Image (tube, rainbow, N blue to C red; front, top):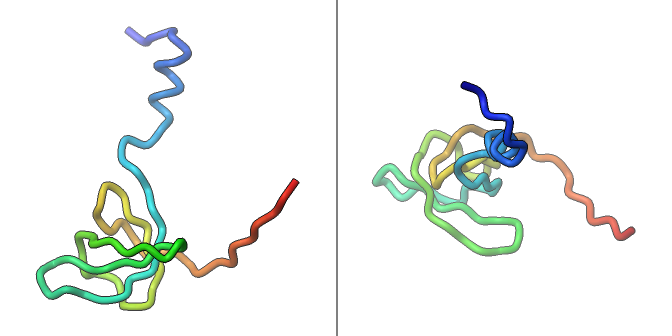
Length: 77
């Protein structure tokens, strides 16, 4: 039976794992890569399927796919 609870319906729309976009800086040779985030921090991720220097979408610590290099703007309202 479908739920009519609006909060449960909203939660079903949210991703289950965190999503992060960053740039691959190196491959570690053991099936993992190193990625730099926009704020300058670095993290290790699973997967070596993307070329070094490419932007990637990481979900749950694993490379999902390559993403385009789009400009980022900060706007104050």
